[in-house]
Image 1 (cartoon, rainbow, N blue to C red):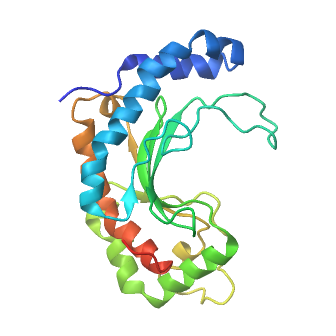
Image 2: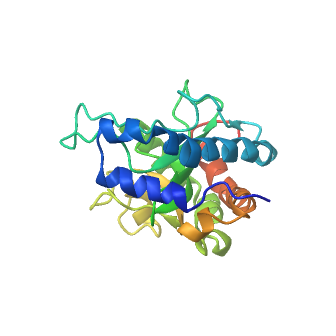
Length: 228
């Protein structure tokens, strides 16, 4: 086994955070390509066989632009923060029907001190939120198995940032998992420290994580009438 990332990936991303200008980035673009982008693409390609084994509906898109790997450039048009680059690199492992309908995804994130692996639905439209909430309410046993069994909760946690303060309309406030219905995104995350991201067993570790997350993603697919 060989490493995908090493300390130079984190050095580059830290320096980008401190020197977030096009001039600096273009002067150091080769470091980005060599230590961040190319290793990440190689990792994604190596994860594809395991992903296909988990679900025939999910795939890695290896295109360098518009594929699974996010662009490092930020869209700052509607943001007060006009810095042109993200000081992190992320990638989505897509559902085959992602362009047709809202769909969950697996996600990998590389960032100094803040890397993680996860899966779920990020900020879906209100109509999709309502649909997921109703499905969880109507299928509580499946939700328990997907999101709250010890095997999952030992390593992963539900992302609760941005949750509603009050119970959503139409659901009883005393329902046992009412806090899960308050969510606006349904995503399970596990932090990965820098040592894990630079270890030679990173691919094996991520493959195991994808398998643990699979029932959760399967449940969300069922909520949206998608095959898994």
